[in-house]
Amino acid sequence: MLSASLEALIISDRVSDYLYDADAAARFPGVDVVISCGDLPYHYVEFVQDALRAPLYYVRGNHAQAVEYGAEVDRRGPQGGVDLHRRTACHLGLLMAGFEGSIRYRSGNYQYTQTEMWTFVLGLTPALLFNRIRYGRYLDVLVTHSPPWGVNDGADPAHQGFKAFRWLHRVFRPRFHFHGHMHVLGSRQSVESMFFKTQVINTYGYRRMTISTSERQTRLESL
Ligand SMILES: [Zn+2]
Image 1: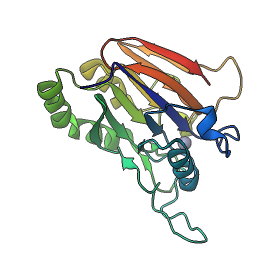
Image 2: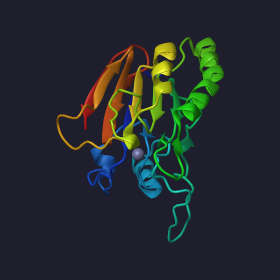
Image 3: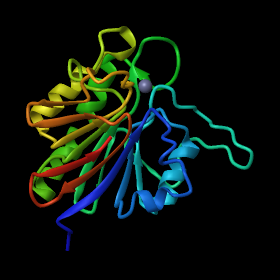
């Protein structure tokens, strides 16, 4: 039996002192799932998951380390989490899928050309069609590091979004697209947009959301 809604905490790009604190569990009670949109230290993401005692789903950002060296353990990703890159997952009735990284703008890992991202997105089509058959819908939440092309993105080469995400929105109609990569520097910067049927949300820092799993309503609580 699925609950009517779930509480999600979505994080990206900026370590929050309010969250990275011994009182985190008291400040964020009742979180059912933690979602990371990348460009955060792996040990920080693990802390959030452990403190809130919630399962973690994540993608890596373009600044992710191939290996994050630590005093006791070397991490190749947040331990105990589910890497959503190029795959789908279902948690408490919430259908998720994800893609890591940003547009390629220099040498380094976790950066992709528009063509490479098209390949990734098209490669996920069978899994999304399977969702439709099994659950009656393709996708609830798209989790990426980069925004879509022309939606919450930037004009400079490092912050241009991916065109393939726009196609995914039109065809598979996720209710939400959570992304990072875009640092919020002023109140005039767009952090929420509607594109086709999808609410595209920049999760810079953290967002807590109540997501209905039985009807198409949400309550956005905080930035
Ligand atoms: Zn980034």
